[in-house]
Length: 369
Image (cartoon, rainbow, N blue to C red; front, side, top):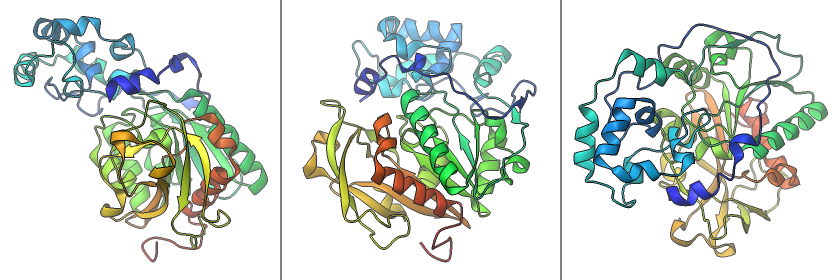
């Protein structure tokens, strides 16, 4: 699985320099990042092992072949694929030692103050300062990436949102700063859109702010990569807010034509989409079916229309909603290819889902689905 995902990186680290619409206020060093003091282990983000010379030496001692890992796995500058994989997920590669032996070797490495600072350096406390523009609903588009950079997709989604906002009178604020996730800043918005966010990007206090914002009635919209990391280090985000854990996507070929089947044709989110449509994209599969966790499935994939291989789910949701407290969450796994954000049916789905998540649709949580 990791090997397959690696082949899709294709130099996208250099594909896009994210832009922000708002100036930011730069705060001090982050000290409340997740896993700051956690012991080294085979379940640590690989990046944390690589940032420590002592932990890296322990890794190379126990697994010499780690020196020849692909460069995308060993990159320590952000964004880095090493933030979304662990050594456990690399088990089975040539010469990989017994997990218990490697884990014991790593756990003997102390976590120094310098190690803690290095772990926290990929987070930020920078709060956007520019005034939120007029319009309704008011939407915060969040684009911080520490993991896999879906550069062309992020840009295409951003352009599509701007076009919709101009037509519909929406207010959009763009940021790639985790510092935007504070109670005071978030209360200005009806919904937060995670535009292909990848990697662990929020501090503990920022996580708490986003969770409270949604549970108390705010909206969340996630595009494609926002639910597509191999390893996730925030259980509430992936299990509750998204509602499914990424398993993989086909690589032979990576992009395939498939039939999207609209399951709920009566929802205001799917209005005008008919029974479905065909399009080409990178099709995600999940370890668990979001339907079994209470998600309201809007659209599925017809697995007979493409070749999922050993990633077949049978019942294969691809877009769904969840009620989170008084808040609303929508996630669509569609959207790796930038062309997806020019597909009229997909754009209609995203537009109507965003309106619903912002509390402007025909149903709300917890009163209805």
